Every structure is written in structure tokens, then in C-alpha cells.
Image: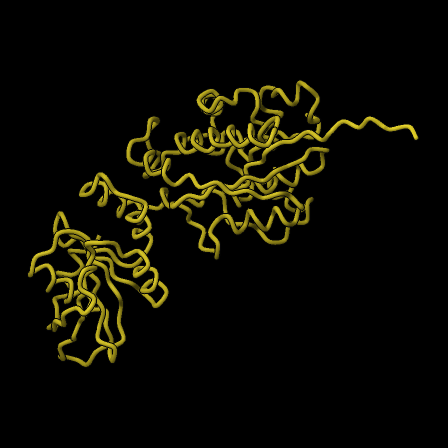
Amino acid sequence: MAQTNQSPKVKAVILLSGGLDSTLAAYLMQKQSIDLIALNFISPFCLCNKKGGCAHGAREISKNLNLEFVTIDNSDEMLEAVKKPKYGYGSNMNPCLDCRIIMLKKTKEFMSEIGASFVITGEVLEQRPMSQKRHLLRLVEKESGLEGLILRPLSAKMLDETIPEKQGLVDRAQMLDICGRSRKGQIELVKEFGINDYPCPAGGCLLTDPNFCRRLKDLMKYNAQFTLNDVLLLKLGRHFRLNPELKLIVGRNELENSSLLNLVKSGDSVFRPKEEIAGPTAIARGKMVCQDRQMAVNIVSRYCDKLENEPTQIIVEDSQNNTGITLESPRVEEGLIEKLKI
């Protein structure tokens, strides 16, 4: 029987963030005969509040399109970028260019491992001033070592031809010419593809959130060598600066109380009310003296359910002392607590 020579499918990586633009790029490229592998990056600065973080939306889109889904953790690299970004910050603490370069460098490594020919992104020309202007797109390509290998199907007709287009691996005629911050073109695509549930919005980054950035700036001011654990704490509770070397984080609900306990490390002190009292768990991190301990007790007490004018008993434990001590808290001046809040 005669055999038919059939060329293998072209393999490409699509960066799937869970945002609308990368989702639309995935749907658009699904029309072409390309073996797509969805790649998602895990960062401690994800803003998405869905279970499973921003990877949740990306994973669901991958299922809908029957794509292989891979995640890569770039937390360590992102921490270093936030501490000292080569290309600076955006309007808050967002090192957008450094972030993009980190992701694409790791993507290049991944492409080499799986034999992919190029990478696809959901970027839209001129949509984001910090990273999506024409000259910045070129800069990112050069810095990541992927010049000519990044296909941006939503704006491809507004950009120079990429290598896969020149080689006929993809059909440029099926690419789009979306440009700018208007979402009109994307909304039309949503209707065309019949997407009923919008994924987590693009730009879901805590480094653009003023409240989170205020906490991050405080952390960087007093602890330049902060770790991933410190960053994860920033996402939880109420934060109080008791002295330049001591911070208190107070849980706001049962879930946060549990999450705080999971982040306790050697040297931390834990504060919680006696069992008969409903109230928050708190972590004190840093150098603490007696008056700081009492102030921490007073703050935790402020958020407990208690009888009017009655002192609240708070158990204080450190990582070396599981039995703890119990301190009482008098009524505390509300204004003082607000002054200490970050």
C-alpha cells in the first residue's frame, strides 16, 4: 500500500494569561493548522481572586480549545525585578518591560525544550503605554532573544511581518489590525467566537494596585532583602507598622487567619484571642520589645468581639514557645491604631 507523506504540524507556544486578549488570540490561532501549547506564568503578584489564581481562567480556556496547558513559576525572577527593575516602574510598582522580558526569556527556553517554532501573544499595539508601543515591542523581542518570532495576531497587520508569516507557517490574511486602547475590536471577536464568560481581565497585577503598592513600598523601605513569604503576607489582612523593624498583620476573616498561620516563620510571634472570644489571628514580624507586644495585643483586641469596657485576653506565641503567654488589653484609642496602619 502506498504511503502518504504528511508534514508534521507546526508547533507554537501561546502565552495564555487568562485575560481577554490572550484568550481571543488563542481562539483566532485555533483556526489555523498549528499545534498550540498554552503556557501560563505563575507570579505572586496575580490580582485574580478566583480559586487557582489567574491560571484558573487560562486552564479553562485551554480545556475549551483542547490545548496542552503548562505553567511556569517565575516568582523568584519577578521579586528581583520589583526590587531593581532595569527599565523602571509604570504608574505604580509595575516593572512591565522587565516582567515581559522575563516571561519571554523563559518562553524561549521552553520552546527549545519542546521544539516549538515561534510564540503567540495577545498583545495589542498601543494598548499599554508601558510595554506595547511599537519600539517597546521591538525592545522586548531583542532582549528576550526572540526577534521576529513573536506573533501578535490581534495587531499583526499593524506590525512588521514575523518569521512564521514570511515562511508561510501562518496565514497573515487571517490576522487582525486592532490598535489602541478601545475594546471595540475585542468585543466583536467575543461575539464572533461565542464567548459567554469573560475570563479574568487582562492587567490583573497587584503591582498596579495603589493599596498593595503602599504596603510593598513600606516593605522595601524597612526590609530591602524581602522574600516571597513577605510578599504573600502583603496580600492578607490589615497591616500596621509598629516600629521600623516590626510589622503586625491582622487577619480579616477565618480564611485569612488560616492563611496567616501557614506563612508563619521562625522569629514571628502569633497573637490570637482566647478560645471563648471571636477575633482575628495576627502575625508580628521583626524585632519586638515589651511595649510593642502590648500595642500588638491592643490592636488585635480592637478587632475582637467583646463586652463593652471589658479587657480582652490575647494569647501570644512565638515560633519557639508553643504554650504562649496571655496578656490583657484595655480599650485602645482608635486614632492611634489608624496612625499605625499602612
